Image 1 (cartoon, one colour):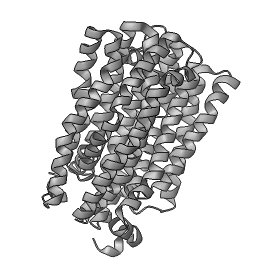
Image 2: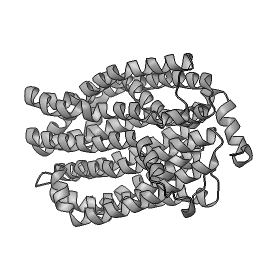
Image 3: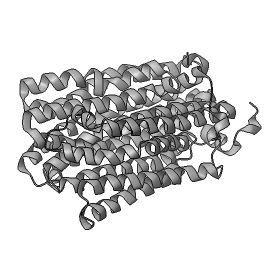
Image 4: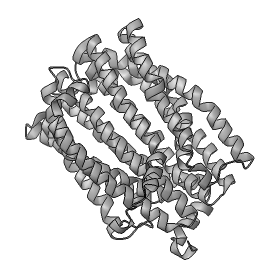
Amino acid sequence: MGRSAVDQKQFKKMTEAPVRPLILKLAVPTTVSMLVTGIYNTADTYFVSQLGKSQSGAVSVVFSLMALIQAIGFTLGMGSGSIISRSLGAKDEDTASHALSTSFFSALGIGGLITVLGLIFIEPIMNMLGSTPTALPYAKLYARYILLGAPIMMGSYVLNNLWRWEGKAVFSMIGIGFGGVLNIFLDPLLINVFDMGVAGAAIATLISQCISFLLLLIPVLLRKNIAKLTIRHFSQSLSFHGNIWFTGLPSLLRQGLASLSTIFLNQQGGDLAGDAALSAMGIFSKVTMLIFCVILGIGQGYQPVLGFNFGAKKWDRMKTAFLFTWIFGTAVMLTFAVPLFLFAPQLMPLFIDDAEVIAIGTRALRLEAFILPLLTVNVMCNMTFQSTGERFKASFLSCLRQGVYFIPLIWILPRIFGISGLEAVYPVCDLLTCLTSLPFALHFLYALSNNKLPSQRESEN
């Protein structure tokens, strides 16, 4: 594909601009987008928690369903995004357009199927996700609206990743950010002013997702992106579909296992302390997710830089990007760890006025604070190998925290240590994940220094 087919200015920026300022420039909008997303998810928890433990527990149950929808959307978005970035770095606009169109229309179709099946089997699904009998009516009510928005949510994840991987994260920030802010305002309005309770929180999320989708789609319709979105670019090749899915597999595993781990967490928490544990660990998940959004945003600013330069075979720029993001991300996590440990007892009462819930959540947050600075290495390795198309390494690393380590530990630790074991599960998982990821990070740096990275074609086989 000739160079004239590729946006020259964007190509030059991604492959020639100073690496550190470029990553920071891209990381700011992606971090803002991630934070706003985390904040409006936390807002749902906050406002619903004011209604009671059962309502708060219901949101925690449905969160695992949302994680599953997000898993599929991110799989298609991250899989196509990695292909788009590397293809544009190699000056192949046609492949980038096929990746975008195939993933977008696949997301709409699969999302529609989830809506139909989810609404038909909503009660058994909520029970399977770990709902208690008292939380079940609220969980079903909340889930109905989330299921209606599944196609829109999944389409938004694909478009969000398009803008990130093309290095135009400002469009992502506008779409995701505006929808998130809108959700924060709609939550108290619908829940309290219009007295809609749990349904109000779900409707606020649905409306916000629709607005985000439109804001992400409009610039595509105005042709502000390089890769083209048309039905004629929808690939008929099963191998091309497979390439998208396998490249995005780490996201599917990570998000899918997050959904599964939430189910196990709910089941174990419900057995140990009923709705109090469900509520406490749900709040814990939302607070820590908000912090994770920062390191994920930094990593998402790093990914397109790595992808473009991998396609352009600029190894020195890749090494600089990797080291800078690792060091910077670790420092940022350290700045969050200290206040999280110190102010966890003051943070929990902001969500709910229940002594048992506050005690459980405080202990869990303080344990996690010790591990936060170590999280960067796993995030970096996962994103690096997904960006370069090394799918098996990325897939293995994505399974560690929520799968390989979490699943056995969620059954072992609470049985030995009771509620303290439940509170310690995630910190122990994070420590083990870090220790496992570190050799991969060092080997990647060695390969960069000695020009031993696989080619783009080799990495996809």
